[in-house]
Image (cartoon, rainbow, N blue to C red):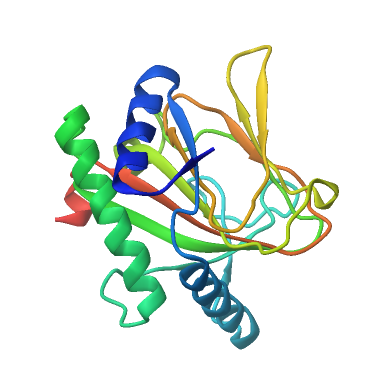
Length: 210
């Protein structure tokens, strides 16, 4: 796994060019990850978090998607949120400079998966979908906040590389997974402990974000 210096971000971009995805460890410092996790838990305990919805109908369906989310704002004054957005801004700049991706914005939320919950196999971006806003998602970015995670706890991100191969990625604290939103089907496997992440999508320009 790569670690997250500027050189490592550049190496990750090279890996995305080759494979369509990259995995980086230590994307933020341990203190920043701990602060993000504490922020996520505070949202959960206060009830300031909503059941995630699926599809254009905006319905909740526990058998398809079991997480709860709260959207993040880059103008939030929480230090941990600022650290996350600052690092993502650096990554966006490098992506635009090196790959000419014309990324304009980042939409992101904290996801809280209770024990046993899943997110079935899906794509983050469809070229011809019902929701035109999803077509602007170019690169998915999942940052994990789970301290002391190990394989027996489950909760892997399963990334489908092709029809015959998949990659299971443990949601270890500080680990960032980047992948092309329109290319990789993926799912969240059930976990034996609650599971926290910050999920984001780098987007091209859309009228909603102007």
